[in-house]
Image 1 (cartoon, rainbow, N blue to C red):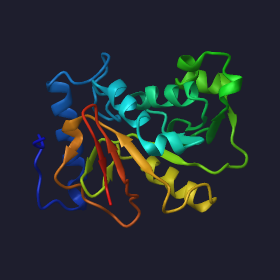
Image 2: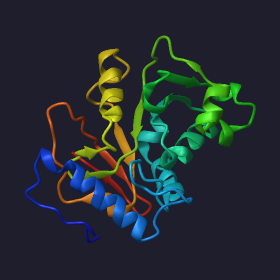
Image 3: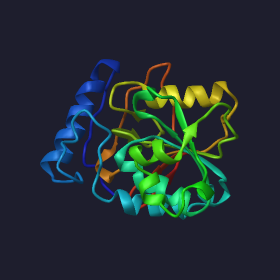
Length: 212
């Protein structure tokens, strides 16, 4: 599929430009769920549910017992599917203010949809004191490219989350790192900095892209 946004010769000073182009395109094209603008956020894109289903069909998902997921609205269905499928879910709290929350599917009382929200995760989850092994990481993104370079909303939280999981030994370099996005969030090039963490699985409502 043809990439909608084509940016070349980018450098680290152009990250904000790329974010604004993605946010404006999604807003102007009515590709955001709900009434909030995409600007300043991980976009809650139209088709997020279909992307979550595509991720759910992957071998990486089926092999996973514990899934880590960002708290973004675009990944809510990912978190719900994890709990419905009987997987342990670890969710980062917003802006990491309250660390990480652990949700066990047998403690959700058949309220997976509520538990997959931020409010529900605080109700049903407990703070992570010791990380279990994480089999799949799912992050929200503003933009990604075909090399697995990821652009977040600018706070650095996704990179911090992956770095922390590596530091405590919950994941290693072979652990699948995925994102779910709208097709228009896939761009030609995302500028990288030394601290930026790469992904190896990109899932849209239409397809799954594996990065070797």
